[in-house]
Amino acid sequence: MNERQLLEMAVKAADDKKAEDILVLNMKGISLISDYFIICHGNSDRQVQAIAKEIKEKSEEMGRHIKRMEGFDEARWILIDIGDVVVHVFHRDERSYYNLERLWGDAPQEKVGQ
Image (tube, rainbow, N blue to C red; front, side, top):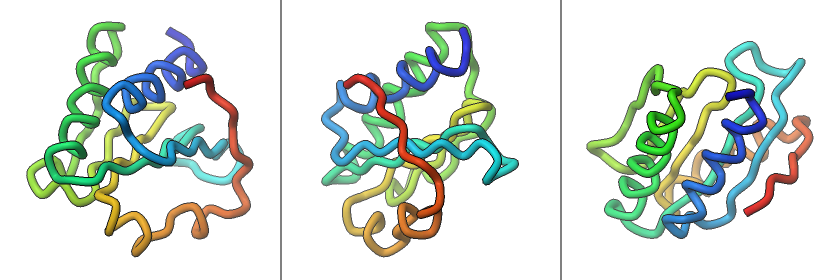
């Protein structure tokens, strides 16, 4: 699976669980952590966890194992590291507080089919 397929799979998985305001940032040349950040949010702890679980399950179905998942139990900000793609699944309240879109405002947004 190439990085574009991985990116599209993660966006679709988040969308399937009704993640809101899904944003993809191209981090190439900006961050050493990964090539893409996906930022989205859910409206409840349960929905945030469901989004993260779906991304994990779909990744593993496609043969990509999650390198690290943090924040699942608290369900306020779950970080999912899939290698070239890092997914940030926020609870709605936390997303506006941390405002990663502004922090990484110099990163170009990518269009990914949803």
